[in-house]
Length: 78
Image (cartoon, rainbow, N blue to C red; front, side, top):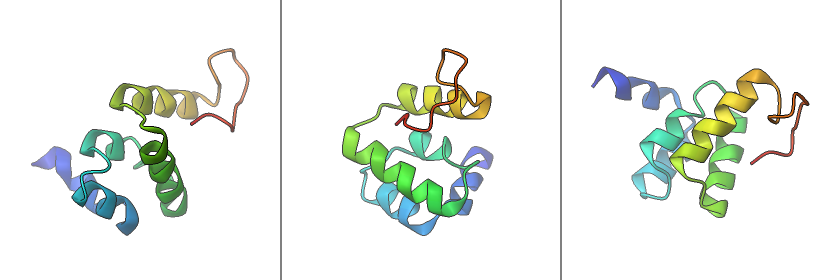
């Protein structure tokens, strides 16, 4: 239960995507460090492109490191 509490802090549109089963809770949780407007945008990108949980986690790790895997910043990543 404690692991699910951060879901309540996600933007309402992200919560709606989870309720509609369009976005997994695991993928949604990877967005919690983003501002709410970015959460919504990224969640929609995830849904539209069919991003897996593993890819969402990879993107989060890259975002936190500020790199695209090559040591360069990349704002175009999914």
